[in-house]
Structure formats: structure tokens, C-alpha cells
Image (cartoon, rainbow, N blue to C red):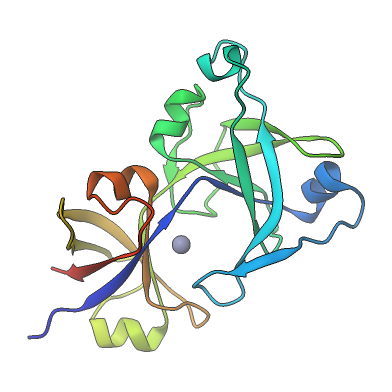
Length: 197
Ligand SMILES: [Zn+2]
């Protein structure tokens, strides 16, 4: 049988905002300015950035350094910050590893600052996942909610287990890993390729 090939994309730390938080940070009825379409239809990178207000005990804060987050659009019902585990340790925030958007039981917050104000936003480490359309899922013999394994082919190639499959008619086949995972398999910021195993 032919191996199923999956494009792999690296998600750097970022923030999704609700209109309410967007208003708090950037001003009333603010509209995000799109700079780049992302691989998933309708999703885009915005020009806007916010700064994390780090805890006073953090070494990053001591040095006067601030971590910024790119805003990804469109606006969502609830705001969410996605960090790598390295970021979470550095920021001293106990961000749980959950599927993006599953915020019900999340109790970790980070305060961020925009040009017009501040907002407290839930922080998570997003579980690695594969996006696909129903047709792509059928062709790859995978189902929504299933956990699969994928081998990344690179100089430091490795096998990722427990990748959650997310099927939606608006999705396009792609595996999303974070910067820690990308560094572990030597992808850096580059896009890569994986094969289901
Ligand atoms: Zn994704």
C-alpha cells in the first residue's frame, strides 16, 4: 500500500482574539488587517501584535524583554493564546495541553497588552493535530477524533504518536506541530513532510 503523505506546518506562538478582547486591545469595533492567508481556508495572519506582560519573577521580564504574539484571524468566540511548552516554562504559566479551542477547563491566563489596553487571555499548549476534509480523511483511512502516528522525514526525522485527527469540510490536509516539536525533528521554521505509519 502507498504511504499517506501529509504536509507538515509549524505553528509559532500566537493569539486568537474575540471581538470583545480585540476592542479592549486595539479600540472599539477594530478590524484585523490581513497580511497573509494561512493554509486552512479562511484563516489568516494579521498585521496586529500584542505583547505579553510577563510575571515580574520571570528572567525575561528582568532583562526588560517582552514576548510578542502575532494575532491570527478571523476573530473567534473566545480568545486563546497558543504557546510551546518551552514558552510556558519561560513564562511560568501552567498552560495545559489541549485540543485548540477546548477551553472549558482551562484556568491558566496570560495578560497581554495592545496599543489601546490590556486583556487576560487563556493560555494553552495546542495538541499536535492533522486537519483534513471528509474526502481527504476517507482517502487516508482516518477518522475525526482518531489518534494517529506519523513519521517526519528530515535530517533529525522522528515518529510522532498521538496526533489527533480533525475532520471538517473547511479543512485542508495538513499536520500542525509547534516550534518545540519542529525543533525536535529538525524542521525549524521550514515546512516538511510526514507519512502516516
Ligand atoms: Zn491547526
